[in-house]
Length: 218
Image (cartoon, rainbow, N blue to C red; front, side, top):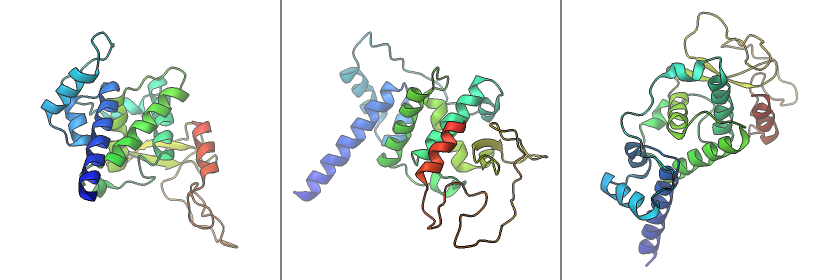
């Protein structure tokens, strides 16, 4: 009986995630990637739960794959930095590249975190410009870290999206201070926080206050 209950719970969570992804207008193969449902099951969910005239579109074709989209100096670039901060705050991405995690089968929990972060981004940004497919692509690209990655400003501790390989130190989008890739390791006194590590307190645990300050600076 316990095994049956657990299986029912997993199936229910999988279907709930699929419906959230459908409402975010994710492509079929994106929904399949995050839920493990077949294309036929996804189509049936759409027909059963999404009423005609609901205004939801079913996008076709390939998902976004151009990194340059996030590096623009326009409003898209500002949105990308805000979204990256929220993805990090919600735990949808790590603060350092972790490409090995991308080789694992996606979990329902990770998919729910991604949706939570995207929905928060849509609420806090006045005129959001990034859709769910690009949000998922940004999360994957930052986790892989081979083309873009996060870098924290040593001056204001804002989080920035930078290219993985650069010829010069990029400037912080918030305060325009240079952000060297490797920072000197200062001597610690009394177990203080390491310089350039804005998410750690003396115990080594995430610091929620610092994370909220970083989001406010984006």
